[in-house]
Amino acid sequence: MFLNDCQLSDLAVSSSRWSAIPGLIHGITTRSALPLPGKADFFDSIARARAAGALPDLLALGADQVHSDRLVLVDEPIGDNNRLDGFRWDDRLRAGEFPQADALVTTIPGVLLIIQTADCLPVFAIDPASRVAGLAHCGWRGLRAGLAGKLVAHMIAAGASADNIQAWLGPCIHAGNYEVSRELVEDFRAAFPGAPVAADERHLDLPAVARHQLERAGVQTQAIADSGQCTFANPGLYHSYRAHAAQAGRMLSFLGFK
Image (tube, rainbow, N blue to C red):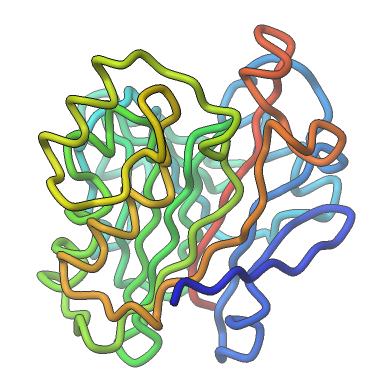
């Protein structure tokens, strides 16, 4: 059984199942928090979300999102003094963006992981016992490369336990509104045999693919919850690239422990 789980506010959507976990901060901003169209600069988005009260003022780390399966592990303090090639840092905002990556894992309290979406699937994962957190930007390319499963594998390597990991699938475009080519559906069926990747020949189910990968990586079925929210079907609440094209803004998914 896959549980739908969504707690709504004007500024952010979150998991009601996670609301009582000590020190956990998570959610995805709504259009009310970041109403501007177009993909804004990472630092501008952070500043605006904080000003709107949708994002806490913690050290924020993001990825520039190139639809890859590359993850970054944050297991030591990050700042301007230890930047990687291409790493961008804003000392005033206490925020940084890693290059050529689509997922982040951290073992450090006080770090807020950030990704941006506008139809792609944000996959949130936590181990409340070890306080390891992981967040992935899963479009079809990332999922085709197994990004959701790799997120869990990196968390386990960083000290999380598969038995303790919980996952939440945030708002994204749902299968009924996500028409793709027959070739892409066939490719996913070949890559993930037995997985419910599509109900027909033209509509890809991103959350179903992610759930399949999470389970294969060791996450228990009952520990996976789905927001149940479709970005395309709720254009007043979410940005949707398919619905708004170039006028679509971005939501910020955020995850970390205090």
